[in-house]
Amino acid sequence: METIDGLAFIGRNPLDEENVFIATGDSGMGITHGTIAGMLLSDLILGKSNPWELLYDPSRKPVRAAYEFARENLNVAVQYTDWVTPSEVSSVDEIERDSGAVLRKGMTKIAVYKDGRGACHSMTAVCPHLQCIVEWNAAEHSWDCPCHGSRFDKHGKVINGPANIDLKPIEE
Ligand code: FES
Image 1: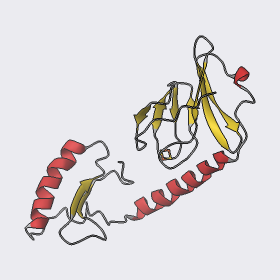
Image 2 (image 1 turned 45 degrees about the vertical axis):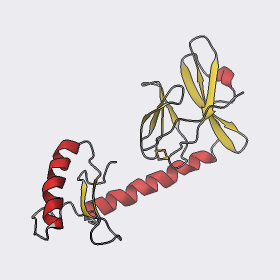
Image 3 (image 1 turned 30 degrees about the vertical axis):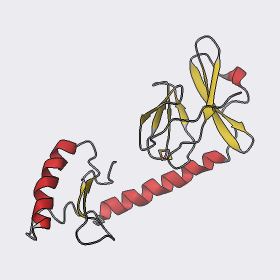
C-alpha cells in the first residue's frame, strides 16, 4: 500500500486496543521501514519514548497529506463518472488488432481486447478493487485503473494491486 506522504504507518493501530501495533504502507521502502518498525515498535511496546513515534504515527494527518488526500479522492470521485459515459467505440469492429477498448453493455461496461489474429477477448471493465472503470493503456498493452492504480494484463490478469483478483472474463 502507498501512503499519501510516502512514509510507512508504524505504531499503535488507530481505534484499536492499546496493545495492537501495525507496520504497513511501505510505499516501496519495505526494507528500510521494516528495520525502523523493529526499532520503533519494540520501544513502544516497552513503554520507551522514540523520536520517530510521531513521524510514523498511523493516525497522523500532515497538512500536505490532507490536501493530497482530498485531491486524490476528488479525482477518484470524478473517475466514477466513467460508469455513465458512452463507449469509447461503438462496436468491436472499431478496435484495431492487438489493442483494446471499453464498450458499454447495458448498465455496465466491458473491456475488449482484440488479439493479433482478430479474436476478441471480453472481460468486465469494472475494477475488482472499488469498482472504477479500467482504461486501455496502449503503450503498455494493459488495462489500468485510474482510481488507485491497479493494473491488469491484456487478458485481465492482475499485475499490480491494490486489486488482488483478475478482471472477470465475459463469455460472448
Ligand atoms: S478501484 Fe481502486 S484500483 Fe481500481
